[in-house]
Image (cartoon, rainbow, N blue to C red; front, side, top):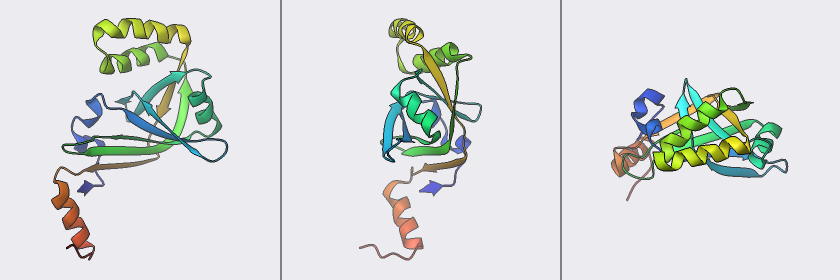
Amino acid sequence: MRSKLLVTDLGDLLDQPLNALVAASLANGEIMLTPYWHEWRDGGFNLFTLAGGIKHRVMQHCPQVSITVAENGGARRGIEVRGIASFGYEGVHEICRRIVQRYLQPEHAAGFLLGLEKAGMVHIRIEPGKLRAWDSADGVQGWRTEIEQKGAIIA
């Protein structure tokens, strides 16, 4: 497994319509994992959510979050960014449009976007405080080699 990669080493991973998982801390200390549609742009993740909704309020309370995008099979590339969530309303409709068009067919996107506009969205921006990226394209053999290099015995 190749680790300590740059975003550019991940190829088209962040161009694919994969769900991101965001981990945020609730007031009681529990972690809330939430799937999001996203885009990687200008060195960080853009997301959106309902302004004033639970996800927005949780991240406002504790803006330290972790976001992960990873493939389920094949090359199994992935990225995790730990950072501080920031919020904004400027340009939120354009951000929503770009993200929605990544995930929905054109005939479904227009109506969905109209609903988002009526509901009132907020833009969430997560830039890397820490970034971890990996690519396990070499599969099990890569893991085996890494484990063996650390002195573990594999039967």
